[in-house]
Structure formats: C-alpha cells, structure tokens
Image (cartoon, rainbow, N blue to C red; front, side, top):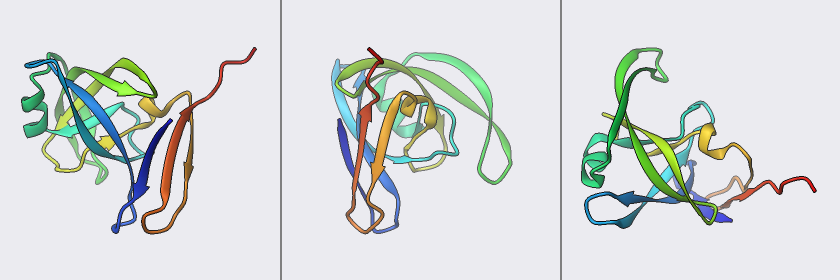
Length: 128
C-alpha cells in the first residue's frame, strides 16, 4: 500500500520513487493524482534530466487547456505497490509531477477529502 495526503491546495498526492539511471539510486517525488491524465507519470524536464532516463518516444500530448504539444517519453523504473515496474514517463515544461490512470490501473484508491487527509492506494487482489 502507498500512503499520501491532501495538500493545502486540495490536491491528492502520493510519493513515488524513480530509479536514477546515472547512479542506480531511487529519488522520491510527490506526485499529484490526475484522473484526467491517462498516462503513467509526468515530471518536469529538469527532474527528468537529473534521472538520466532513456528516451523512448516523442508524442503529441493534449494539455488541460486543449493545446497539443510535442512531449518526450522516457522509460522509467518506479517503485510502485511494493514492486519495481517500468512506466512511461512524460517530460513536461510544467512544474507539477502528475500520476495518471495508467499507473493507477489495477489498484483501489481511498481519499479523505480534507486538509492533510489520508490518500491510500493498494493493489486490487487477483481473483482466486
């Protein structure tokens, strides 16, 4: 299970650790849950460069305001729900790390919508 909280700006956040390919150490970022983002993870370009990740693609990405921009996609290793998993990470010019529905898929989320409220995510158990 992963635990986060609600910020003073009313955003649900979760810590996710990403492997830095330059030194094989994990760096933890607080990501904002964004159910309108269908990707895996999104980080500011400066943070992506610090992680020394391999570039795997360049895609058109639609922003919340409707604009279409080119975005670089990197292969990242994330520590997620007790496992290391490969996830597509989009580099953006924005400054807010986002976690999208692709990484949340297969999990259950609970949110206490109040300042400092608990945010928790756990894997949905496999049917027996």
